[in-house]
Image 1 (spheres, rainbow, N blue to C red):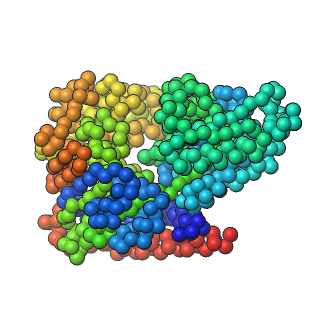
Image 2 (image 1 turned 120 degrees about the horizontal axis):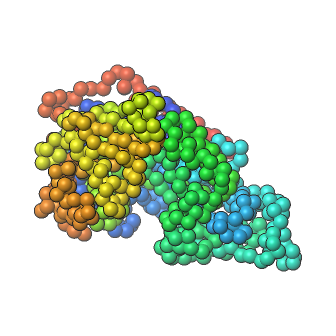
Image 3 (image 1 turned 90 degrees about the horizontal axis):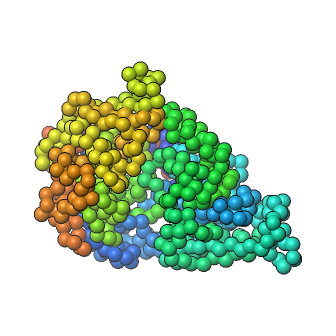
Length: 606
């Protein structure tokens, strides 16, 4: 596959994502299963095999030792996998990007003209075409273009193509002149200066991007060099606002919320550990912060997000370099119904929940679906891990009020419905507060058959908030109350008004009150079960049935899961597909195909 073909693959996928977002006719193919899209799971067992190394995971897939590589596939294996029998490769545009952060607190990088000149000179097209071999697209906004809040493509200018001439003119106008005629510019104060770009020595992509940035500076007449460095060493400096010039980093997001814009570039966090690596301060940017955080109307939140991005793209505290395509690989000989999630790609919750045996193999029910997991689970305490490889397992064991569907849209899960109110909506709500009332499903149970009630959910939210250092409590400081007036009614109040409060509580995993009351809020990090010897009370579609440290984790379907498909009642044929749904599937598929063909044709003509 040549560079142009890969580029068409990446950009055509962007067009398909756009169609999916705009067209109500697009229906994922997995909805052809019996029941509704909420019904699942269909497999009997889910097995996570610990297999380290990209090459070993690829080999295991080829040898039919696994059905899915449980991590994004290194592009170097793309040709090998696409040519292999019974293996498919899916792609999704990453909900994240690679970027360089500039120390805006350090002279002369505190001068906007210098940062913008560099942004115009960096050849992002080269990064996508050469460094990524066509498997990425240029990006300017700090909000990924797959996110509906992104400003990407809406500005009258881009930094995509290297414009060294404009960059040089901007530096001339700002007083960066070659005073001593040595071919190197001095700062406006007449002093010599040099720029060091640091990039992770463990990443070939980072090293090449660092060199592209150094080359751009050199073409601007700036003394600059790029040096591969220990990633964790410079990350610690960034965490605590230590000294640096320019550093390469990457960011990924697990949802489409953008309330983080109120913190990442906020001048109030200029010296706050773990935030605002660029040490950026801008009063115009800060002026939009309150509207982003505390408006309750989508239109007002959207306006603030757009304006904040507009400022960041102009000011360039970060130079976003690319949004790359993530590759997922899986076998097609036994299972079907793989879900290419807009955030996770194929290795995620929805594939586990909707994948099923082929009819000719006795499907859709049954079978053991096998993942590779590059690292073993580090703990079965979901509150005590930051490892994505542990989350791969733990996310199948717990539920939340709301989940994101494969297109990133909210779907009620434990919640049947909800109503958010402010004082303006309901005088009983204190002025400046937000109250959200949920009606909870009445047929959900824990794995020990205890009903899941609103009391469990209220307990979970209060537990997370009150447990010192608990990762799920960091954003609950504004929650003033969470209580259950009835068995299946939940009320949550915040002492501020905000569009984002729904997601703050809606996405959190729910834990069983009757188990964690005994653990206590001060011992949350001491909870360390080792299943199946230590039986875990959970609610998700799977629970651990076998575990050998360093080798595998086996999970078995929870037969009484509240969205489990009632096969006995409906029969092997299922309820069928409504005619309007079938038409929607056809229309969506045809539309997607047309977009791909048009996108490929246009690109080949350019």
